[in-house]
Amino acid sequence: MPFTFRKSFKIFPGVRLNINRKSMSITTGTRGGPRHTTSTTGRETSSMDLPGPFGWRRTRTRRRR
Image 1: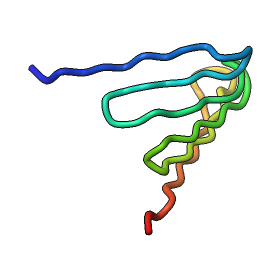
Image 2 (image 1 turned 120 degrees about the horizontal axis):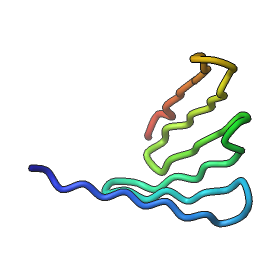
Image 3 (image 1 turned 180 degrees about the vertical axis):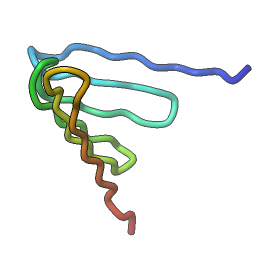
Image 4 (image 1 turned 120 degrees about the vertical axis):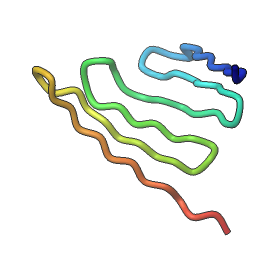
């Protein structure tokens, strides 16, 4: 069984610091509205919950040099 670790801390209202085994990320936004997440691995995700079973998500990955 693999070892997993994930922890999330609320820094300010609407801002969270997420830590896992390989990276850290900052999430801004509210639960019912738009959110933006930026990770130390270069991944940026924007998402928004829509009414009903719908949602929107866009993920971009920055190239490392």
